[in-house]
Figure 1 (tube, rainbow, N blue to C red):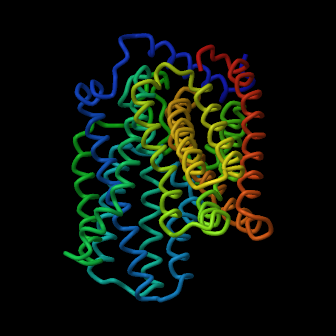
Figure 2: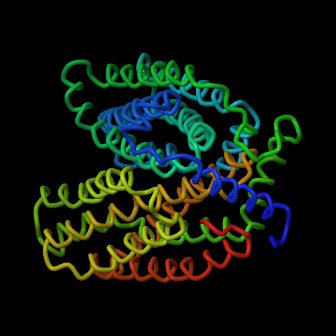
Figure 3: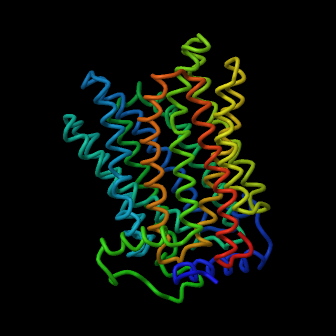
Length: 437
């Protein structure tokens, strides 16, 4: 028996998800996109939005570097875009649980488009630019849990692993293509023009999202029609979301395990630069090749999972992803050449894709629909903070030791965290009453 009400609801949701997954034939990626017009609209909207995001990031970094002339200014831009939304994640996730998620997503896209248009037309001084970028990033943080929760509403449980893989493939592809598209546009339209193109992508995304059906938080089957809108203050909703994660053993293990793996391994991008330039004494091209490796692995991982994710237990896929990501860094510390490090980091990308798909598919089976936005918001906000911790602590470790030692220590720590999750999570799932994780 589950030990409290939160666990009973989570167990009920997972059993319903498992029952639904056996009802009907599982669809492949192409068939899912062809037959499900609502998911297709969400897929295209997410792809366009992520492509635009990567366009504007390149443009803003270039603008700040040229106008401020200091590396710290670029660092502040990145910090405002990443850290501030992560700190507000309990509240941003709660917003997507209080209102129709379709309307939340549309409002966020329109707001982001308007803010980018304002930045493009004024190119304000750095202090005001950081404020506008911070507000835009918070709107994006509200959009993220709403869009992840929308998949659980729009797509039958049997197809959710495939849907999350397809979305990962599209968004990763958009992020990878963005800098290339920006490079092609800069000579034609300049920084302001690239930012206006991004603003247009947000408006196009909003138009696509407008074709979706209503997505109230209670619309996932099995929630009893309950809704949280108006039942508590936003602060109360945020606290309830944090409390649910902490008191539900399976959720707590997933969250702590994911954050631990990221906290150990998040330093890899910085360490790769040092590994290529100092340890291997290679040139700038080698740095670029190593930094591209994980992205290539991610793309390949999502492509593979789009075909096969439905065959996996999500618990097994999650633990496998943790293990591949961590052991990949551990072995990178032993790499003897750029080619070996490239291969290992590419394999790491496969693991990161598995982590993402497994988490996004598993959580709707553990969380009542009325709380799903908060759980997604809190989890990914905490992961962002864990990455920040990794940058700081890993940077100090890198200065005190070497790139190979940093990779070895980071990978070993992530591997220990993986073993803990591998032992504890199946037990927690069984105690919670879900026989088919």
